[in-house]
Image 1 (cartoon, rainbow, N blue to C red):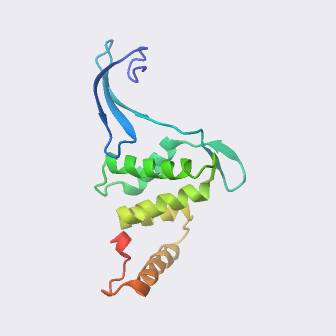
Image 2 (tube, rainbow, N blue to C red):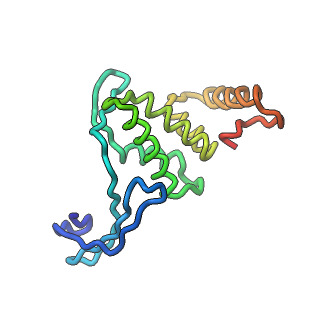
Length: 166
């Protein structure tokens, strides 16, 4: 593995362990040239996934882009990297096991929203604001009202927020 600090062609693995959901291995590495330490993740990839954008354009699935989007939504919310990694692993696993090699971007967005709704209500609303292209404060209010209305139908305790996003 090339060192991200000095570009040296090789690095030494200092520690390996499975990630919590056992779908990948986390490796701590050290560069023998500059001494820099960094972490890599090794995971099984069943097939090359292609994302079908709303305009019909097909692009390779970019795991790092999904991670960045989730990080933005969860910023300053006390969500750690392992939780984000589990969300992304779950989304990728669901797409890969569907048997399809192409996934509509809308499906990836919906899976992400489902995961964030279970994790943190603020992150869920933040992600939705970008995914659903909110343009005004009214868009936020309508979205939050929809959440409350959906919950009100089945919530016996009388709370306004759905249990998944409390």
